[in-house]
Length: 95
Image 1 (cartoon, helix red, strand yellow):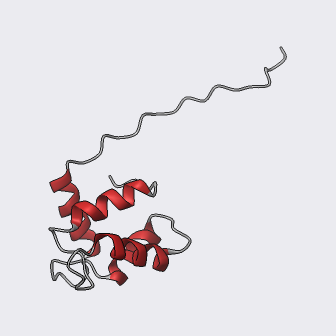
Image 2 (tube, rainbow, N blue to C red):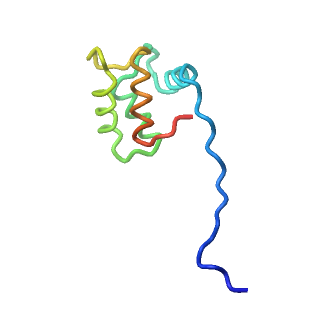
Image 3 (cartoon, one colour):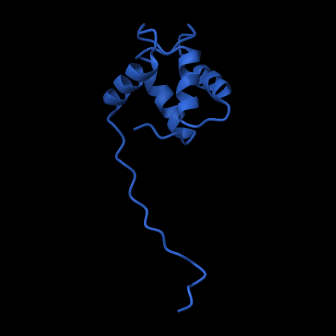
């Protein structure tokens, strides 16, 4: 039997995203390596590197620029929502 030129692929659905508060806690738990309650540019770069970015330092700089509302050089819990929006907009999946 001749195979058609197209093939159907079964794809499992994406898992539902975590609620925002759980996501904040998960990000801080995994990437806040110095446990100061903030994410530094270096910690953000580690996040982007783990999630496959070829340019994690640049991504971290851009995320910091967009999400660091008070300009102190770190992302605290009040700025986390903007960071999450930014990361999702760039196509990174946070589960």
